[in-house]
Length: 174
Image (cartoon, rainbow, N blue to C red; front, side, top):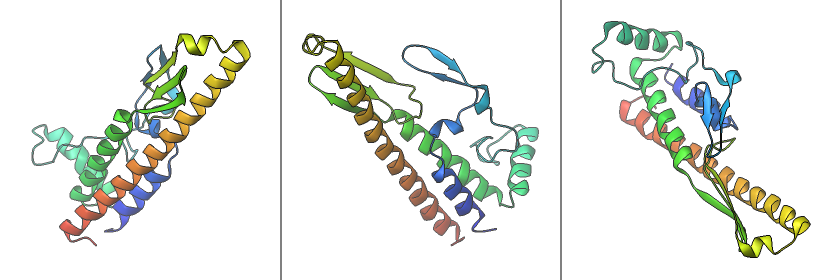
């Protein structure tokens, strides 16, 4: 039971798409994309509240948190640690900004996969490259930003695992 939170966190860290933590839609800088395949069910370990049970005034919500922890074989504290670490990682990935490309064509994006923040900038210098060269440069800039984003996501996952480990030690669970 004490290691169940670590196992759950490891499973979360192996997910390649941070958007697995979102509910039903994703916002990009250009359009909204409906993603019904990303609906998180009520028994998913990544759903629920990050509020402390003691702070939760709604008896029904408190009972739901306690039931989710029990269902997963965790204490309420372990469950809340998992939820808090998920929120921290999700915020880190969403606030990440990386830039790929070179003078003339740059791509700025966040750490989400697919990105919620995506800005492609083509300057006059980039337009002067010609159609074929510009297309290749844009693709290279997208690939570069994607690789940098992947590094940022991996770092956020490492930080989440470190956060969980430190807090599990404080709780006396490790």
